[in-house]
Image (cartoon, rainbow, N blue to C red; front, side, top):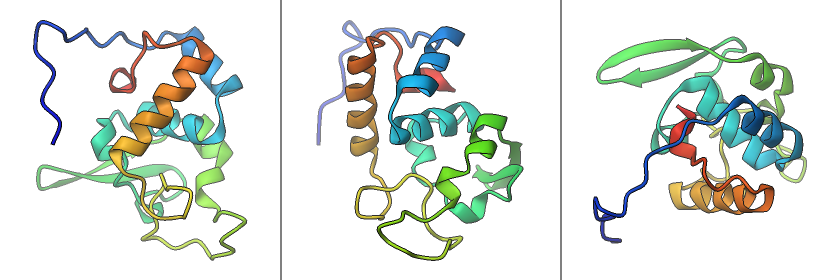
Length: 138
C-alpha cells in the first residue's frame, strides 16, 4: 500500500478554468472526456465516480447513494448529448445492462482508481494541463 503524501509536499487542488474544460472536451481522448464529464456532472470524488453504473443514470438524472441517503443529481448537457457511455463498446457487442459500469477498462470490466488516475495524468501531460488535477473537477 502506498504511503500518504506528506502534508509539506501536498499541492492545493486548482479548479479547472473554463478554457481547460473546453480544451479537454475538444482535444482529449474519449476516455478522458468521459472521466471529465462524470466529474463535472456529478461533483463526486474520483474514487466514487468509478462505481457509477449505467442503471444509475436515467437519461436526465444520476442516482447515487450518499451516507445512507439516495440522491438524484441532474447531469450536464455534454454528457447527456454524447451518450457514448450508454452504448456498449462495439468490440463487445453486448446489450446495455444497468449493472455495467460507466467507466470501464479496455476489457469492459469496471475501471479501478489507479487506471483512471494514470489515464488522466497521461492526457493532462499531453495537453499541457498538469496544474489541474481530477480532484478539482468536483
